[in-house]
Structures are given as C-alpha cells and as structure tokens.
Image (tube, rainbow, N blue to C red; front, top):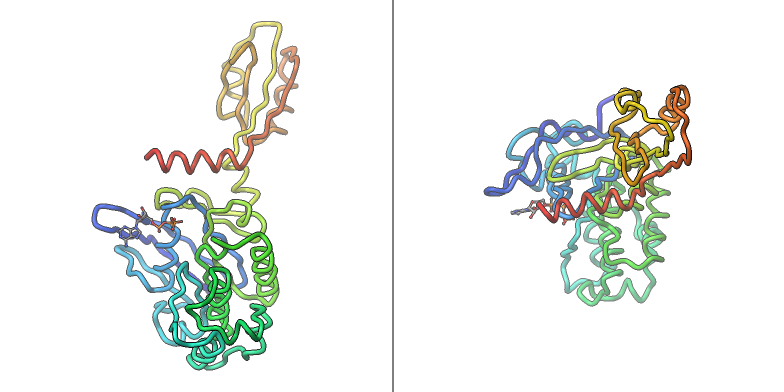
Length: 299
Ligand SMILES: Nc1ncnc2c1ncn2[C@@H]1O[C@H](COP(=O)(O)OP(=O)(O)OP(=O)(O)O)[C@@H](O)[C@H]1O
C-alpha cells in the first residue's frame, strides 16, 4: 500500500539554524499520528514542509503520492494552522460558504455546524469579532470544509479550555473512526498519549522516537531496580546482565537502570547474591519529558 505521506531525508535550514535535520518517516492511510516535541523542536516546520508551504532545503516530501501543492492533492487535505487569517469583513457563515466553494465535494453547512457546534448567533458574527476559542472552531470548520481525507492540525488545542479540548478530541475520534488520516503537532504529552496510535518524537530537529505511545514512554522513562546486599560481590556481574544499561551505588543501595524490569529481576534472582530491601522505581513520564524540554532550553 502506498503511504499517504512520505517524508524522505528532509532538512530545513533557516540561515544558520537547522530547524529540521534529516528526518524520514511515512504515514499510512487511517493512521492518527502525533508529532510531539518541546518548543522549537521542528514540529511546525516539518508540518509546513509536508503541506508544501515551506520548501525543504534537502530531501523530498510526497503527499498522496504527489507533490503536496498539486491541486488534486490540496482538494483532499484539510489544514488547521496555529493562526487563522480569514476575511474579517465576512460573517462565519459567509466564510464557511466561501471555503466550501473551493472544493469539489464539500461538507454541507449543516454538517460543518454539527462538527463545530456553531450557534445561529455565532454564524452571524463577523470573523474578526470572534473570541480565541471561536476562532479555533472556525479554523477547524475551514479544515473540514472540503471533506478531506487527510487532516493536519498544528497545536490545535493551544489556548482552549479543558471542555473545548475534550469536545475537539471527541470530534477527532469520530473522524478517526471514519478512516481519516490525522496528523497533529503538540507539546502536550498527554494529548499525544490519549489520542494518537503513533507518536513521532522530535527534539532539536531530529526524530528521536517513532512508535506506539507506550513504546515511546518506555524509551523516555528510566526504570530502576535497587537493593542492598550484605555480602560483597562483583559489579561486573550486574553490568553484564541482559537489559541492564547502567549500574551504580548510592547511599548503600545498588541501582540497576533498565528498560525491562521483569527481565532484570528474573536474572537477578538467579544470581547467587542475597538481596535485601528490593525496590522498583518506574520513572515518571512527565519528568522525562520535562528533562527533554529543559535540555532544549539549556542548549
Ligand atoms: N522562518 C523562520 N526563520 C528562522 N528560524 C525559524 C523559522 N521558522 C522556525 N525557525 C526556527 O526553527 C526551529 C524550529 O521551529 P518550529 O516552529 O518548527 O518548532 P516547533 O517544534 O513547532 O516549536 P513550537 O511549538 O514553538 O512552534 C526554532 O528554533 C525556530 O526558531
């Protein structure tokens, strides 16, 4: 099966800044993918290149097997970027009508209103008089106007309150069940975890993880088994245990760092060491993610 999106060895250089650094991935039809990463990781730049709105300095992007800017590709995609700029003098209804007219098989106004829950009063409002939350909903309606196969949302819930976020993601869930391909950027770990079946993790313009949310979480978090031992023993034994990535001693406890607690425990017990006060610590995902963010800021 042909992928819906194919990003091959793509980089983007802004003057001296490498915003995106040799990334490659492909996305299949029906996938819901979160592009996750701290601020400045290169998420938006990557999305703009997927859409053909920014030209890669290097590499190639294909959307629906073609150049992203081809008309028949554009007719099949819906885009919600961080800033919506629409014609301010028009009412919400008029903007919706205008956008619908750009597409061969648009959704009806009725369908768009159902998706976005615009009231009659809101439909009459001029676009420049909308609140932040209403503007987001308008942005979403415009992304949906052409009944797209592939949806791109750049940080779709920034500035939304908790209830509006829930409503938005419930709607996305329905679109997912209709088989739409959905790609969204976020720096909310929880959103990526809740909504996406695949997470592509960006850091410093590179992809540092690509997989199911649980696998990404496991890769981000450090887990440890620690214990005290009465007898002296060789650390070499512990270093060579399968699954152990680091061994150290702190305050009289021996710590084994691993990504596979079960494996390490079973091997530990088979060693001839008398272990006491065994403790297992599973790193907190939020902490690990925060560390990523901090290391970015400190860079
Ligand atoms: N037009 C531009 N000119 C110069 N530098 C840019 C430009 N666009 C982005 N950058 C830089 O490229 C890097 C990646 O930016 P990008 O907006 O893609 O990150 P991001 O992961 O989407 O972050 P955010 O969540 O803050 O939008 C940042 O360091 C940013 O300052």
